[in-house]
Amino acid sequence: MLHFTSNTRIDFTAPSTGALAGILFFEDRSAPVERLHYFDSNSITRETGSMYLSRGIFSTDSNSTIAANSAFTNVIARKVWIKSNASLTLNADYGATTVPNVAVYYEGVEAVWLVK
Image 1 (tube, rainbow, N blue to C red):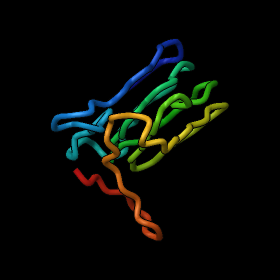
Image 2: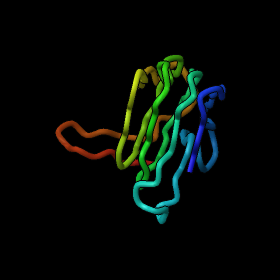
Image 3: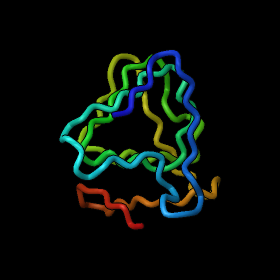
């Protein structure tokens, strides 16, 4: 479980190389279903990469915009909850970083796969 509270400062960038290149967070595929991951900080400015929370819930209840300064952010989760005054920016400027995009969305298909 991840839990970032209201006054934490979050600025993450996934690695550009190696086995986990492009991955910010990788939830164990045998983790309990719908485990909550809280992103409640009012200072989550950069999360460049992919969050793989395939069994979990990405939840935010902050008073700010999450990931606004990121080149790109992918959220792969069972559920995404955006509450109160929070907003989530999902930029797609893949050329602005050396972090690889490891998530692929296929038009017309309601699923996302990791390709690496």
